[in-house]
Length: 229
Ligand SMILES: *Cc1c(COP(=O)(O)O)cnc(C)c1O
Image 1 (cartoon, rainbow, N blue to C red):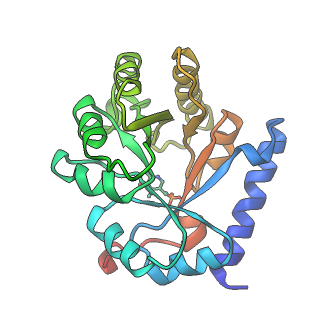
Image 2: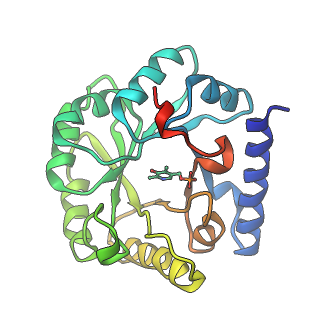
């Protein structure tokens, strides 16, 4: 087995174990392979090991990879910060966007989503770590934003996403995931998605009901930003 295939199997085992420990059905947790900075060949290798969902943060890099991998039936997720002048290619070339944090971006994605494609799946990114993080809408704004985004015709609001500030304190880490979960539970909307947990903390995110864990390093190894295509 290739290194990537071995890593996919290891992460899969970690996901199953965390789900079982939490009394959850492991099939309710999905693995999003975060392929930013990784070459198309690494994505192809992951595909051959059975992986279908890939997350990218940088638009041009993602579009280049999609072109190189157009022969594969992959599902692409945009998970990076979104500038408003970049919404059209995101609406045209992705199946999911995890990082919607303001209405203007959501309105543009909805208006620009081609009619030939299914509605774009979106999550609202929430800043659950206060001052320590700049991305994401404030927890107090989520209810309002969710109501407005849910009404947009070409988007399908699926749930919430967070990137909690890194911390060595496991209680604090878990509390951040718990905050995202309770924000989701408080919304009077049928949301099935919590996108949270990365290589370091996926186990705790699963204990707090994550449905997508976004994993880069544990699958592909350390990132080399200098080598970005
Ligand atoms: C890079 C990135 C990840 C993956 O992080 P790892 O620690 O490498 O698993 C997950 N989510 C987002 C939003 C990222 O930018």
